[in-house]
Image 1 (cartoon, rainbow, N blue to C red):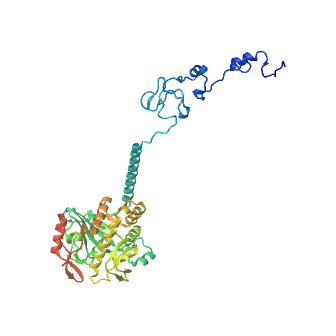
Image 2: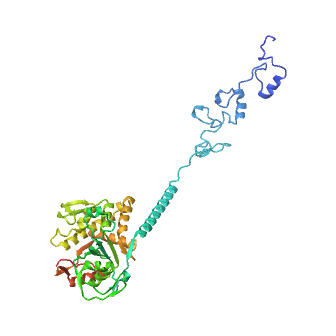
Length: 439
């Protein structure tokens, strides 16, 4: 082998040239090839005699070029003048050296800064859209459940319209929707048909809202009227009865006709709720808080209350507004309790905690609308106005009173005609009510 190992210097013929052509001169040559400098080697490690070739090969500026970094520990990219692409002018912050492109502000795949203004705008639009759709949907859902069963167009010889909006609010003793167990639990009895258990006029006025209770034992005259079912005209004979007898005789239309005839005040809307609906609304609200000034009991209504602030459920609330035999002035005392409770009920039903809480709003609306009977012209806006007017009375911005009484006739309560006339005029003209129910 000529003193050498095969594979060291004695290459087969033709291999040496081929190797040189592909890989440059390697160890097959007589002299070792000079050290090849890799790109990552710092400039100071390159021999001076090969500096020019190295710099030309990697496209870097000579070590003597201005701004050339000799200290690789700075993390500087070799071949780029110090400070290039870091802001400022060439060779300084923000600039770049001659022939060196600026550094990009964002590398490939970098996440851009969030556009908070756009996000807030989109979020606001989305929220507004959801609220609008929910509101419109709730309106049509509730509007479709209203029982518009009373036709006030059948009422004849009506008084002129006034400046206030007036509501006749009626609580009936209807047992509709009550099971045998419910009737026993609520102490309603099982009488057929329905009668008015409470009646009041609510005048929603710009000068202030007024709630006027009409005792069901009020002595009134039944005027000429047209039958709500038969369409026949029944001439008035001057017959005097208790006010609740008008409802029992021909329903809501005759009741409205009788109230208008005896007061001279036009009734714009009618709203009636039965026992079941009343109790269900209270329960849907989670009870109604009320301050009872003096405790009382009544076996007939099931009332058993201590004095003080307390929360009444549906059963207790119904007993509270129906009690009459526990008081000396039975009907007048009961109407005061009814006003007090209805105002508290409206006050709680119209709070943001109920209106903005779907878990309370929908059950409350459902419980009320299923049994609430209104006139054909009553809208949801009218119904809302009625509740907010009742709420204002409870909040001290309005007035609650009984119809002024002057005496009695055959056990019926006789209205004070002079004060009733003054009261009606003040409501018709949207004046502050100064009339009181005190004699």
